Length: 225
Ligand SMILES: N[C@@H](CCC(=O)N[C@@H](CS)C(=O)NCC(=O)O)C(=O)O
Image (cartoon, rainbow, N blue to C red):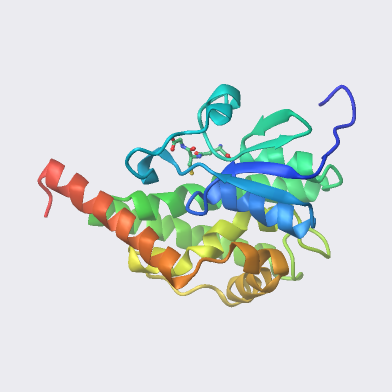
């Protein structure tokens, strides 16, 4: 716990990138809380254009060299869930738990699908993601939102899945979304913050292109065809 109450001073600076699911969480929450913010684009290493110069301020203040990182009032904070917590200290324990559940149960198979390099691994990840969405369906059985009566950091934690669903489908996620999850996705993406982080068709295409190129390269390296 912090020694003194933390305060968000606007504008917040986000070091991040649209393709990074963890950055998308933070941008969603900044927009949802209607905080003034600016973004300094720092693509993940794998998506950096040749010759991209990583801002010195990012290198100097990011403990692991990972996005997202925020600056507010001259202080720096990294790691998406602690950032979400910091941005909205009023989140309930239920919202925190649901966000952590998303992080440990939904994210690993989601990432497994798009970083999967052979058909068996991709299918295994797709099955695990499908199971996680089955659990999500149960969590959404009697409410519109994951924790309480309004969107919370749990929706922020989950929204990267929703923005990349078309991309995931193109990369091997073949299941149909359970009905309530489908409706929840539409509800989240229809929020002003959801519209803010939703991908354009070009972004989805770039995502698919990057990940299929990665897949083809690793298959060539390991001799799988
Ligand atoms: N646990 C971190 C994970 C952040 C993370 O893995 N970020 C990736 C990009 S999506 C990153 O910066 N990787 C280092 C790199 O690309 O050099 C969080 O929740 O924010």
